[in-house]
Image (cartoon, rainbow, N blue to C red; front, top):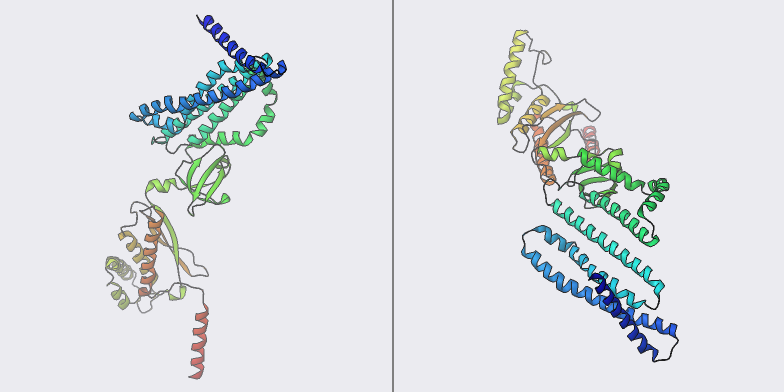
Length: 437
């Protein structure tokens, strides 16, 4: 039955070609020219016919399929439409029709039939690869909606599949054009493997890096990373086979080679984001000349600070017991143990942080004194803010230091500052007034 259908199709093709050929013979041209003109006319008609078939296959068959898909609740169907998978499948119809119609055109040129069939076979291969690629894109998009895959380098995996598909498609096309087997082509590539390794060096490094980054979970899409070498300080938006795209906080995009994530160091703030606390480590430089012992009147005055009263009472009891046991002579302030204004301010800052609703209580919290420098005595505040959002974090930190800067004068302390021009002017004015007096 199949052979009978094929014979009938060939007869109909032969009749069409001979009918158009006889019509052209009426102009009295050379026979070879008649064959050429006949082929051109048929070729134009076939192209128009194939365009019509492609149009109807997309606008009618595809339209009906899309309507059926949109009625379903499955999101994967919608992704097939968005990634043009069904449109690519519709292209198969004119290619299949062309395989039966094209021989009509070149019936007068039998030697052209084989190359035309090869070109159609290559077109079929290309369309097949494009369909597979669109399916993979749909799979990637559906996996991105899954929580377990949202931070994975899916783009890298897709690009690896693209490279494999290009290699397979290239091998098939080469086999079709040359008529040799695909294995002979692969064997010939073995001899050129060194050149291929050199050409695809960055791609191979990126592929290995993508796998190791994913396996080690060192970086994910959405992580905040800092890589000073490349000027990157922002959120990872995409991990590709060859590069990682980081959107900095100034909205610029920094592109980092993927393989450098293994060879170079970078800072990932994911741990901070997951912990719910963002660290602050900042010092206030105290002018050394303003540090001194407190007398009883000053201590009593500081008791009016509510959050500091329990500390002062407990500290005074400990100091009095120590001085009584060791029979300290109170006539000289340097004898025994005394309270200092710096120690009192340090205790106040620590108590203030502990009572702040914006400080993470389960994380390290301290107010410590660092080694003195030419800029005074650094009193460092080390704590974690319980809001990791940048704008809120900066606002909380500013409020805390605003308060401490304003409170420090109540302890008769001064913050160290390099002298400004106004300081020199004030000093000169004082010296002139002294001389006049």
